[in-house]
Length: 338
Ligand code: MAV
Image (cartoon, rainbow, N blue to C red; front, top):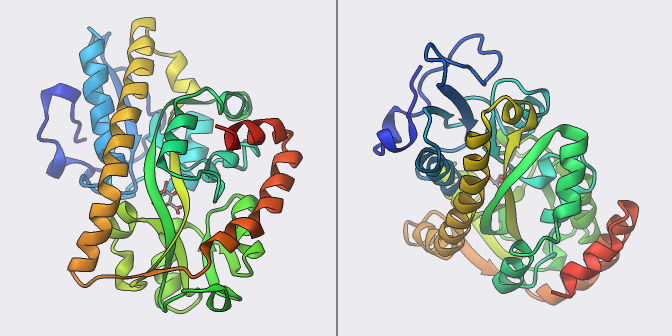
């Protein structure tokens, strides 16, 4: 098994994620040395993606804040599946101990959590920053912990999600009936249905083929991931709907966490929060740069969406209804008012 242990191997990259340990059960595995702990993480991307870099940073910080020996076994390139698999693993306390996850991929356990990444929630990066530095999402975290035994130990994200499609979609007429993939949480489909598109929930690792074979005509995503997974090869049109600024919790299985020494638990919480800040700065700073890199490389063509303000109007009632359904109307009002 290829491990990298935090500070000890800073030149992580290439060796990562190559080995598949057959039959790995519990990810938390005390090794031959009584005190040594191995924590397994998972990334859908390679070592260049902000999520992977954030998890590497997390490992370095834990190593810095904890005196004992901790090994980090971070599997890359979707070797352990995609987020909708990770959420099951974390809930059951098997296969992985920590990862970074879209709230909308945790909806099956905690119906309220997708409010965090509901499209058109944030006005701009300042608003997003303000909300993430408050404890506004505390009740949503609590439901996740109670229902799924999954702990939020930090927040990363900061990518802007746009429409990504095989043909240009630049106004409401072109959006009408547009077959597009959305994440699994019902609110995601409801929002895009309200915009008159034809959304369907498809697993992330099936999106590329679904577009290539014409089952769908596009999806929506942020620059870091479009670039990392080369979605531009099948969907070279990016329309700046800017409908989401991503919120991506760094999450850990409660079952794994409780097995750890107290001092390591404390180090993990501190490291999670700081790695989150690192990741937010990184991805939000790189977002526009990555979009431009893809333009310059002739990989994508970027268009504005005519009448973007109209979209906002169309989704407000859907956002309100969702918040009411999960008893979070006050929370939504508070977030909007920040
Ligand atoms: C991007 O790769 C990330 O935001 C990731 O967290 C999501 O799961 C993914 O998109 C997706 O759309 O499913």
